Structures are given as C-alpha cells and as structure tokens.
Image (cartoon, rainbow, N blue to C red; front, side):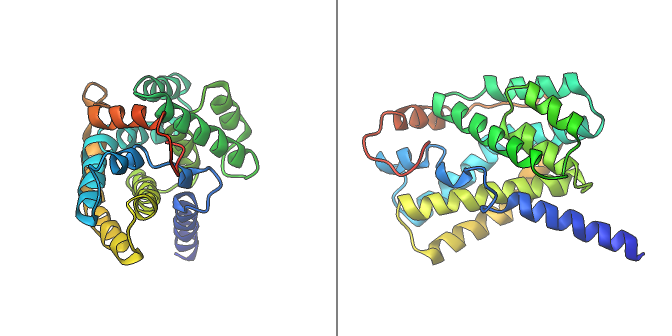
Length: 231
C-alpha cells in the first residue's frame, strides 16, 4: 500500500510540475489572440474576458489539443510511432496563423530540451520526438505519459496550465486585477472537467480546429503595432 501511495504522489507532483507556469517553455509569453481581442475592443471587462476564455476552452481546446492529447498519451505509452507522427502533423496543419504555429513549435522545442535534461522520458522516445517537427501537445503528451498518471489526470494538468497562463494574459492585457483573475480562473476550473470529458470521447473524424475569429485576431496580432505578447 505504501508503494502505491508513493507512486501516486510522484505522478501527481510530476503533473503539477508540467502544469506550472514556471516550466521553462515560454507559455507565459503568449496570449493566443486575446491581446488582439482586447485591442479591437472585443474584450474590455472581466465578464468579457471570462466569456472569451470559456469559449476558447470549449470550442477550441476541447475539440483540438485536448482531444489530441487523449490519443497521443496512449500512443507514446505503446510506442506507436506512426500514430504519434500523424497526430503531430494534424496539430501543425490546423494552426491557422503563423503566430499560432510558431507558438506550438517553439513550446514543443522547449519542452523537448527540458525532456533531454530530465529522466522523464527514455532516450528512444526523445529521439522519436526530435525526428518530428515537435508540437507542444505531442511533447506534453510524452512528458505526461511517463508519469504513469491516468490520461484524464494528464488532460486536467494540461488544461489548468493553459487556463493559468491565459488568465495571466488577461490580467496584463485587459488589464484586470488579481481578484478578477482568480474569479475567471475559478470559472475555467469549473468548466475544465466537462471539456475533458468531451475531448476523451472524440474520434479522429470529430476532432477539429475551427475557430475563425480566433484565427483572424491571431493574424491581425502579427502586425499589431504595440503588444505585450508574442501571439
């Protein structure tokens, strides 16, 4: 019983580490189009920021990255190289602006370098990831797969890490106070489990990345004159 508890604690701590904004992969430097939404006056208040991020969670993340993760983690555990490559290609092909693609590539490379300096993944797994043009979801899936945690818990860690970064982006760009940020994070935390349940059920043909306004704002952000964030 003691061994089982220790392994569970270790898995939980590793997931908390992966979800932390302190993980050196640069997630804090992206707003994923939110800064452009602020610039165009689509998001100017706490309520609008909360609604924007909840929509992004349910319409974009749950149908895209979280669904990819739900399939990529078992693929890493089974060393299914063709499946891993196919999922990575899907992520690259569905990034609808150069900024969004650059973000997933940069964070994927950074997490790959982090993995090279830890014992989280095996050398063969790291080599397989390095052979790809690694995206962040596939790199995260590798790191999470090595924790031994259930897939759903891995998705919870990914989604909360995303939510925390995006709330910080809202606080800086709208701008908002810390209390407002905590209320938004609370709303996102309440919505995350249902988003994950949806993602876990999606087959390949139902997975999608169709968020046209997000893509338009991301493209506009590429030429935005004054900005805090890289996307």
